[in-house]
Length: 200
Length: 200
Image (tube, rainbow over all chains, first blue to last red):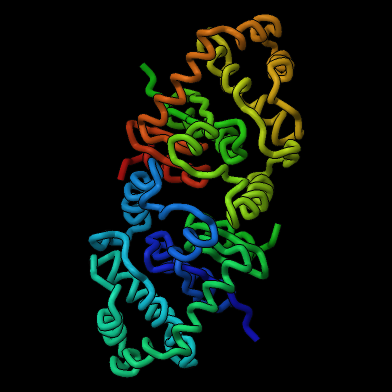
């Protein structure tokens, strides 16, 4: 059975996007699959950590906006963030939980389509209809996903995923776990790669 | 006149150490000098940002201890942190302010000696005498630095340096400023290097 890499992310996090664009290739080159794990940092950061939202943190908030734009250029990605940059990622995260549950969908394609709509096109992905629209662009059935977003199983699934991540000490986006080893940040992917080659 | 790179750091930050070990070579290879700028994150994080200390932050504190140890191995540095890992870096920071004011001392050597004593040897650098001991190991005059640590000019100089950094939006360690462009984190040095080659 193919071993996987767990990839935790929140759609409100552009750093999650930068890493999402690269984790698939990185995993594949080490014969791994990616387990896509949506998070809700609003819950984690405010409730579990007792901190303000990143963009509302004095000094750091302003820096992060500049660093994210510069990082996009560094990685060669287009950068057109949504307005406002902070939005509800609940529907988008539920879409990923729904897609995983279907068992045969291309979850990576959905994750990247949603991320790009938000951060490369400045689109709104906060509403269920907007999420379904994005899903339709990669060939998913708009009506099926729209129904899925309202299902109690999907809602409970996301709640459980967020709680499980917090219980495991996972608090940021992106957050990668390889064979039990935790790595936080898009700027840790080179260490993830080294770990896959030879845990040091 | 040689252009410089501003390097902000706090001795309580092992990430500041990881970067301090590399910034000199990086600067030199781009014909720059390093302006060593000690910070007191206790002031910045608690007073200016309203956040708890990093090690006391739920979830993140435990991760950082693991990540710092792993990062030291990644960079090939010895890792023997002080006990407790949190300590007062005021005297060590004052020593750097004092050394800069002398005008002809090897500030980099002093910074690295203090950092290594704390994080590679697990030594205590929280007391003025301990700081003077470290300074003596690189040939500085123990009595002169001991006197300098108590001088009002040095104390005021550090206070002003911390306030100035906060006013400029600098909030972490390491924090590098190149030609006005800010970079936070030891994991941004590759971007600093790229910026020195061609600001993008």
